[in-house]
Length: 426
Image (cartoon, rainbow, N blue to C red; front, side, top):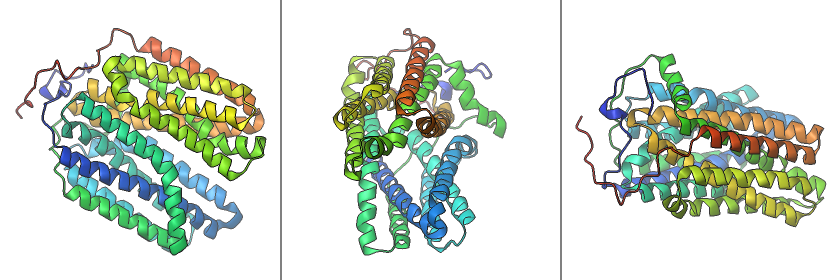
């Protein structure tokens, strides 16, 4: 990893596969991660109901503002916190974050003003962003080789896609037994269970790093992105993925129920097909990365989602939309899921926290802009023009990524050819 500001140190070397693993701890952590995902999805549904109780017809504005604050927490706060927690025990931190999220949900049913909702949502989102960053940083130390790590990325991607469809079903079932405020309590219990699972696992100590001023540390991740050709290409891919994700998220209901005049069930099918394409891409990731470099996989994904967006300009039936959504889902998964693997492959242990924080912030910033653009342009220019514009932007971003990320970059590491290495003595 390029970093001209400091002489090379042992912790600056890329994190080698050790040939040893603590898979039991990894699975405890993964189950806790899935529980937290489901609890977050259920809480989001309950939040929509709470917003309606507080604001009535203005609930859409309240919920939209709350979710915008969530995105802002991911964009701005995570890198600062990544600096502050460098020497905090990660196991303790994960437990505290789960407890903080549980506490936020337990307080939400008692709020009486919208500003209180905004404040609690921001705290909740901040804790979720930090949890995601720490999870991403811990997993490489618990797995023994490239294939194990790649499979872990696929599991995380599949869990994220299933959360989008399973959480509303869980929330609907819970609402049959509890009032909307009771759902917050159930979600809080899930976070407490997640904390208990984490308490049962072992997490290796973080490697020591340089002590840096807050602003210097905040800028470290973006500087490293700009200094590394592979990661400069990743920024462009974030733009392409944001275009596709925003188009699906914002305009599926508009297309299905507005343009095609179908019912909610058809919208649910469209979202499910997009999710199926994304899951299939995640499953294909492990064999794909064995056969070809990560650069090729991610650029193929970007090309697929660009083609899908451009094909959206000619769809006229639900069947056509389902084909387009499947292609876009497959493309976004192939273009985005290996990003964590790429960072882990080329980043030094001392920089992983900074790089994951920078990637989370960059991807969230792209999504924040794309969400707004997809809604505004769809309403003002029409869906055909929006598909065309987003498709061209995604295609241009894919070309830029291929130019910024040279073919002569590091090849994907092969654990079968790599000798076992002992961790550097500290």
